[in-house]
Length: 468
Image 1: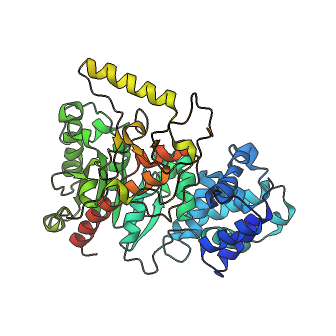
Image 2: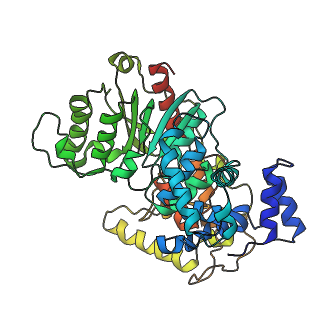
Image 3: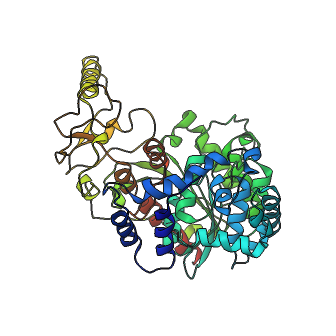
């Protein structure tokens, strides 16, 4: 795959720290007469990630001719190497060393690049290290605790816990697009399917905190003591099994608010029985936390479940207090005019209004709403009417030329979708968080993510309780 030379030049400039990242990109955009609207993600990150097309299968992986192509493949081979390199100066690297070196050997043996075949393991590791050295969210300089990130998504838990001085020593996520975003921001490819014994076997033996935003699934409750066996076959079972084996000082689980009433409340009851009775952890009553209470202009309620191995730690724990400062959409709104593609067509806008009118006549609600700058957004969710529930007014548009295959003209009322960056801000992700995927994937990823400030506030209280 061919990459224009300006890509490598701007990466080189940034790598050696001659100028800031944004200034380096501005320099190159001017130098090569690139469009002002062309972002670094569009010009560099996304094209580089496209090498994933070359490496989707083991057969194609044999054609990898560079370390970058293997890294971009995002499979467990890339995961074990990146985990080894990422943790190279820490004791947990020993857990990954054998498999990582074996993966490197296999990679070299199957490569068609003779120069790559002749390189030493040290040189290959150095190339990986170079790729990972300039990510937006590196390991804290002096980490004070270790954690693992299960069902990691794009790394909301990780941003929050790294802000508190945490060192993530293992991550797992099955979604390929989410893994691209995770790798672009943390320099580490997450392992895949957590139900795989190989993946679970890669987890280092010791860490203080386990984090997981596991999916909500029903259990077949048979009335046993805690119900551990009743959860077998569900993703919660995988979490419980890891807790049982590794015995972290604490765990932090996040789920949808509906878990509280799921299956008549029996799902949550089973989870708590397993954590308290089968695993022997001390679990305070779960709490419903609203992101809006922690500085985000979004009504997003999620259930948090925390647990501690020691009773004294559980007794010392208190859920965080709400903050007094409230935010509105204007606090996260794009500073400049957004691309025309985010504005609705007249035909689609008319369709939404007719659909809402039909539902209102029947006495039903409908998830189409426009959020004013002074209002708080609805929860950002993937699928369904997720984007239409959070339309906004923005009259700064000047170019009404349709940029996508929409039917009808661009509306003149200033009604548009929020951008992926605005969704990122609604979830508390800083602007340095890279979005290397297409908009459709970005909306899905941020809709599935956790609210970073709420997670961070709760994690801070967990760490305080365990003395970290």
